[in-house]
Amino acid sequence: MKKIALLLLCLPVVSNAQQTFTLLEAQTYALENNPSAKLAKLELEQAEYKVDEFRAIGLPQVSAEGNFQHFLDIPTSLIPAQAFNPMASPDEFVGVQFGTEFNLTGGFTVSQLLFDGSYLVGLKASKMYPVLSQKNQEKTKKEIRANVAQAYYMVAVTNKNISFLDEITESNEALKKYLNIMQEKGMMDSTSIDQIDLSIRKLESQKKKAALDKQLALKSLKMSMGLDLNTAIDISEDIDMILAKISAASGDSFNPENDPTFQLLMTSKELQEMNLTVKKSAFLPSLAAFFSHQQQALRNDFDFFQDKPWFPSTIWGLKLSIPIFSSGMRTAQVKQQEIEIKKVEANMELVKQGLQLEYEAAMIELQGATDIYNAEQEAYAIAERIKRRTDIKYQKKVASMLEVAQADLQLEQSRSSLIQAMYGMVTAKTKLDKILNQYE
Image 1 (cartoon, rainbow, N blue to C red):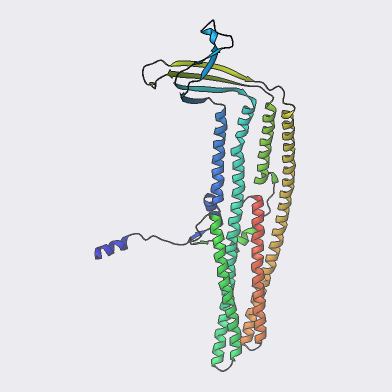
Image 2 (cartoon, rainbow, N blue to C red; image 1 turned 90 degrees about the vertical axis):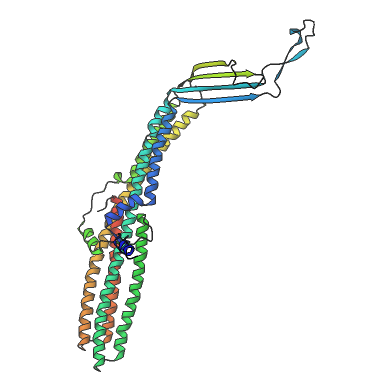
């Protein structure tokens, strides 16, 4: 037993250690594991098979068929009775059965499309479907990266909020410790200690709420990444690092035509133009070749596997189809398709203007959020100094407990405003990154 125990101790231990991710690592993981990313890949693969399916229409088609017939009653035909009896009346007919009781037919047919304008253009158009799926995949990736960034930033903000609350709690704990010493010396009443203790209790409640907020933010991040919600993860970048990058980043030039949504419309326009060519090619003739061979066995007994004759039938030919007159149907189809192209062009212009407006608005929002953050950061630093000085004054009996409570309130309000400013700044950054479709 001792040897077994020693062996178990030597075995490697499976680690359930918490994983940490940078923003880029989280986004890279999401692009491989997010369900939406997997679905986009499947759609791209399916589109490639669609091309193979359409291409096969113009390649040789081979089919085989078999037919077995058992005539319980052989069909009867009526022929004039005079064929057997010249003396019979001209109105008299005789029923005669033609055929055999058992018939078995087997054969195959080969067909080949030689020319069809609609097929040739359609084949070219079908190759655009993988391109369309790829553009859609890029749009999906853009959404995934933005969602991961938003969730990642939220975790970073909640971490900072918890850090702020810890610092404020530590400061109040130090003041409470001093007041307890003063009370033991008979130099402080219990009301002041209760006041500080009340502030600490409120901070503890806020810390518990902040911890719950972090759990929710982490779950949102894990869901965006395609991770199991029970997986233990955390982020490796803090909000100060993230905000420093945002402040240092300069506004990049924006071209709406590079946006995946606009790219999708451009591809859609190409497809519509090809569809127009397909409609026009309906005026052209089509030509196909075919070859068919059959073997037929006619029996009065079920003896198809005996050495008895089979009767062949072989045929080949060409089929030419020339459209002549459709009462204006094909012309109407062409006109409708021309209108579809104009509608796509109008939609492209609307999307282009909308994307440009989104970019301008995102730049303004980020600049405004940055200014607010800088102002709130300075305000929080001032509130910290006021709190620290007020605590010192109170210990020296220069300030009252009311002033301490007021300093606590100012610091709490500044903390809350600064957290909101941080969230506003990273939200604005996420919007801009999503529009530019680029991430650090």
